Structures are given as C-alpha cells and as structure tokens.
Length: 241
Image 1 (cartoon, rainbow, N blue to C red):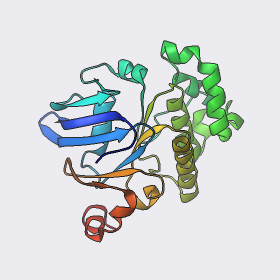
Image 2: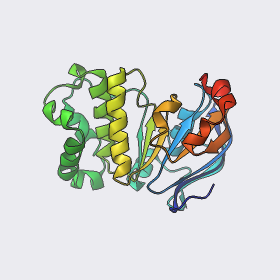
Image 3: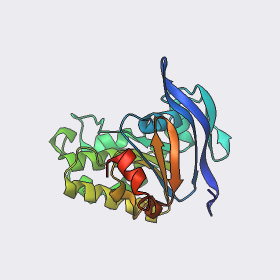
Image 4: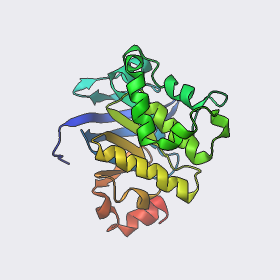
C-alpha cells in the first residue's frame, strides 16, 4: 500500500522467534512518517515479538528492518534508542520506589536526551499534567491509569521519532483507557509517528491511518481501519467480534 509521506519504518520478510519456536513468518509492513499504524490480532500470534525485533530486544532469523532508510538489524538496543525508536512495552515496568520525576528522568539516560532533559520534562508535564501534580510521589502510589501515563511519559523523554506502544490499554478501567487514547491521539496530531499494538479494533478506528491484522506470525490483512469493519468474517475469526 502506498502512503503519501515517505517511509520511516520498513520491515521486509521478518522471521523471528524464541529458541526453536518460530513466531514471525515473513512479516512485511511499512509505516510512513507522521502516520499511525496499528497491529491487531489474537494474543500470542506475534505482535509483541515484532515490536521486540524493531527495538533490538530480539534477534532476527531472517529479513530486514530499515529505519529512515538504514538497516538497524544487529544494532544494540541503546543505539536503536539513540537513533530515534521508543518502545513502551506492555504493563508499566516502572521503578516503583522512585518518584514520578525520577522515573521520567530515567527515560533521558542517553547523553543526547539528557542534554535536553529539562525542556523535554516540561513538554511531558504539559502533555500529561497529572504527572506534574504527582511528580514527588513514588510510582507505587499511582493508579493504574497514572502508571501507564508515566510509562508513556518516560518513553517520550528520549525524544524518539518513532513511538511504539504495546497494548497501552491493557488492564485499565474504561475511563483510564479513554485518557490513554486521548494522549495517543494528541501525539499523532502533533505529527509523531506511531506503531500501536491493540486488541480492541473499536479503539483504533478513529485514530489509525493503517491497520495490519497479524495471525500466526503472518500479515493476513491490511488496509484502512474503517474498511476492517466491512469484513465481519475477519473480525469474527481473528478478534472474536
């Protein structure tokens, strides 16, 4: 599928897995700069594994991942972060005994990010004002929704060009989910490039530019989000909708 903006992320023929268990079987996708693409599909079929490959946490068996036109295969995680890729994983993975402010600063651990940490901290507090109000509290005193916001804020502190969110609504109450998706929509409106993993197709229909349906390690459908709802067979087979 062609996109108006130039490709920022290109994945071609990606094969990967864990030990002798192959999870991804020739996945290819393209994400244009300034766009939001969503990976949906059943649990355990490769969505998280794909994000882990892009961020350098998992080695590829075959294929290529290009970011800004340059292959990033084999690079260390810190080098991938420095190049501009942010991965906000499932759950929170916060430093529970540390303050909100200190957790945010952990996202600016690389020298280039640390040099502009004060400015980025102001930007994060502006986007997520609840974190400013709770900046002196320890992370373990936050609600589930606030913890998820903190995880997102920490990711933003690195200043990445590509933001990858792995099921940001997982385990949250409906109101907190609304707040999280409001933030993601705000980031998109600001021109950020986003790769989002989500289980609930209804959550992404109004914010995604492109949807990839991943099943058994393969892309089985791709297209505009509203078009997905024209394929009730796909929704029933892969998403139980």
